[in-house]
Image: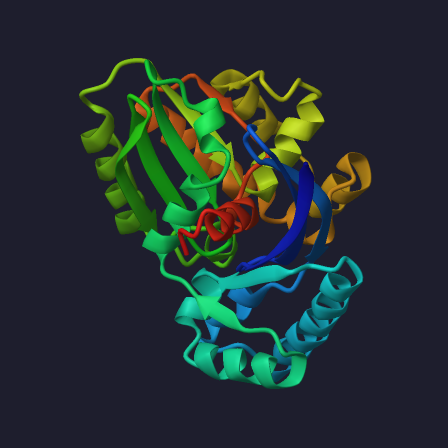
Length: 296
């Protein structure tokens, strides 16, 4: 007998908000299958508010409410039976973050949980990472967001260290990351990876997904440090408008993608890694799996 459950995850990030709708196929004697049914993305840059003025503006609160009303309707159309909405760095730091949560609950009837960096990293780790992690290898998992970057080190199939840093693409765009933060990241990576050989990076986030898509590689093939650095130099040589026109980048992707690459490149350099795998996973995937396995 086959049963299908419909779950949804809402990821309220610093650069954009996403709704992922997933079909979970259950069959007796087999592991459940998680199949993406639909993904919707709205480019509301909350980090621009939270990191520069410390609060979510009235204009963006209205846009969030409209987006959440649309998400609520979409979940109804898709007959979603269970959902969870998580807000990350921007909402964590906006002093009116909890007030915004209350407004959205009242006007759009969607309950939002503001999660800390540690829980964010744990949720992401509960996604499909295990499919990519071989027990005999060591991996540094890097998830770059708009407001923060989560680093997790895996050895022998288990997470041995994890930390979230206030360094993300929207912060870098606004020149809000000082050298001390970079030094802390460098120290953490070098300290935690020094006892391991042949470290491989696993990258997630919209920007590295776009770079991978542009490479034309198959999903199970990695990108090299040389390739990533070449792309970084190439993107740097283009203007914002050229990146949109020539590479078909979204307007809210074209200005942050270089900053994302700088984080991945530094992580590779400091860990001694020369290749990065880019599975199609992220916070929203992790939320669905964490809900299904009752981890949150």
